[in-house]
Image (cartoon, rainbow over all chains, first blue to last red):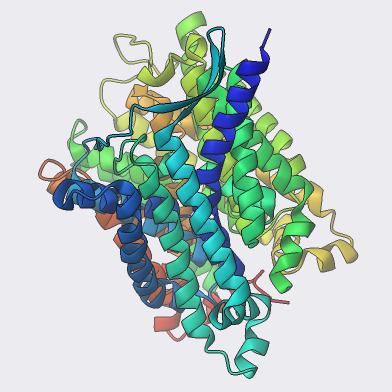
Length: 296
Length: 334
């Protein structure tokens, strides 16, 4: 029998990891929303973010929570460059070409990381890594909130809110949303849509890299770490509606909760299987809802 | 005129490939590479049935491939069954999975279909990894060794017989693809690719046509999985259900060569597999990841140079029939 403590702990764990999924999914959803490109290589930017934060910690002594901003900046520029060179030429190409270009990019980035950084797992050590908040302690029962996860969650929340504010409140953000809704009309209104595409891709990759950097205190970095997040990320984005930033947040939190609650009843290896099934089911049951966003 | 010429060219090619082993070392490395070329050409052809003709881009065909490989190997291990029989179970299971998947995925198009099939392939990998009692789990599974050559157990002293099995399979699959493409079903599939609603309106049972094509594609892919298992003798879930190793590569073979064309997978496989092997043997030991890195870069570069594939590139160089126009389709943006 599950006690109320186990259930609350599961809820807390799910929300803590779900917040991370939310911030990494925002990036993916933003790219799709603005450019209608499904970026299969997107999880690789999470890996790049982790490595930037790791080097910032190893060379400069920066805590990953601060290194995350460096990761954001570096991948923002990297993403803008990649958009200009690789994505822009295929924006009007057949979907087959779009799919395989980003799949090729996935292989290239993952193996470039393998060449540059080696296959070793890298982790950081921070003062708060082994500490945890202990809540509602009574009679040996308590809710444990590890600081590393709490900080990562709060950072993710902060960035998610910033991206949302940027899109809602700034002129550039509004221009970006206008481009997402109808690029032709946006161009007629004098919006430089090419610039918006570049910014959106940079912001998308940067946000995901930021999410990768803040989890570095409790997840080890390796060149293949991205592959563990691909399906999670796509599930979160599809659950919330492809292209919607607020939807990605809801989807991310849901995926975190599904993962932690399914761990109560299922062996750990099958955790992701549940997500695959939900993913396919959501795609199947809501395709019109998702597709209708494309024509805006 | 063109058709008789094309037929003669394919016949000549088949004879050339049939004679090639006579001048090569039957235990040599070149023979293994050629076997893989034939395997991937056949896989690309099977993928082309749905991916090429109906433009339903599957990124999860490794699911069927792995089912074929596991079914025949497991039946051999526990019952000593011949892979020729075991593969029938694999083909049936793969077709069953295709049938199950058709329910949620057939309404999807483009990116959404690709994502759903990708998840299906990954789900099979997770199952194979965690169901250790049946599959042996992450450590992989070996085909039971039977000393001596035997056609019945599909085990041979050299790879030369494997080569001929691959070659015959490729010829049959190519012939089947050509039959379907030029027949009524091919027209229906292409009608779906151009405009699914319009196809429905003129009386094409789109669900049924897509289903028949995917059942065929799944069963052929499973059969090729058995052939691969008997050729390789060992595999593990992460390879056989792998995204990079099979799902993407078999689609890539068809797409680089020219999606939806008979020659596409043949050209694609003849180009990609030797290039990859060359990169592997050249860089293999010096730096891990370099050949895969090059693979990704070449993929990106080819698509940037021409998003419609190599066949279209040739057609354009010849100034010919502009087959690239014909092979794009399904892209009419509303």
